[in-house]
Length: 398
Image (cartoon, rainbow, N blue to C red; front, top):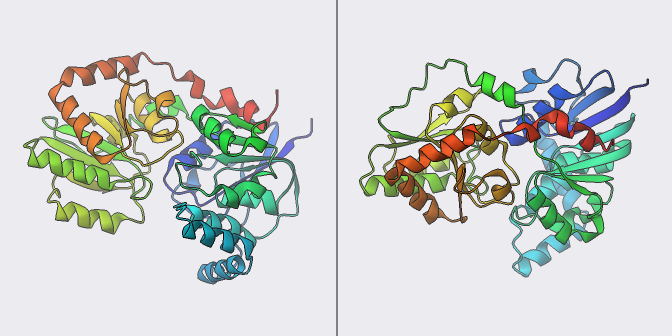
């Protein structure tokens, strides 16, 4: 039987849930049935060595030798397109502040305009993330079937529907990572509702548990303290790491001196977060640990995983913490109550700064609650997340 030809487009393989999901997908494809090409906007990232050997990594999509020249070219391309610029300025004038509209323009529209077109004809082409990957598949790839991934709630993420509406029409299937994300998408794009489908992020349960057994000697949190962990990009507009700093400041001011908060990850807002930590005097309590290629042993040593994000789709970090038996306290996001059984194996709070602090105080004063959440997690079955459960569904093969 002739193998089907598959192309997957993504951005650089940097730390994050999209990368984890993609690697889980790639490790579980049946390569006797499929030939897989992978293209990135930039062929870089700390996880390149984890791509299975069966995957053919194409030369990066942006071919300019000087990447900064490509960025300048993106600006020129965008401004001369006219319509999108006028629409963007109109939205600003009307105070419709789509905070990630510029991301759509630069990572999606403009970067795709300076990326090379692929001549090969594919059976299936997948854009594995909103922004560049989806735009690239829509506009630069020839394929019988095109699939778009959107990993966030479109509206809560501050994405401008006008910018992506036409592009999304190029896809035969649009994948949302939770049922709530699908409902939100369908309400926003009713014309594409029959093409949209909810598929969980791919997670390798046994692999997560096995990697968590690795011995780490550079992290031994004080067991007499209440140890909180967050694994996320150091970004304030999305991941809202600053919320943790403010909560830690309140905890310290109110006499809770036995709390430590460890954050694993890197990102563009590190300097700003470091400044905030120093200003609030929590250098010894709120600790930026940097990135780890295997963060699971570190998470497992802590008491509570806290997600402070302003918006999400269905974050893999939450599921991975749950698999390791660590209760999660999370701000409300699109798929939060699908992912977390509120007050059963985790806690979901309204998406505001104050309630994160309040619930941490509640758990500190009611330690039996945390033990109950842990016991419920131990009994939870995560098999529905296994990649093999959803691969054929992704390809659209019944």
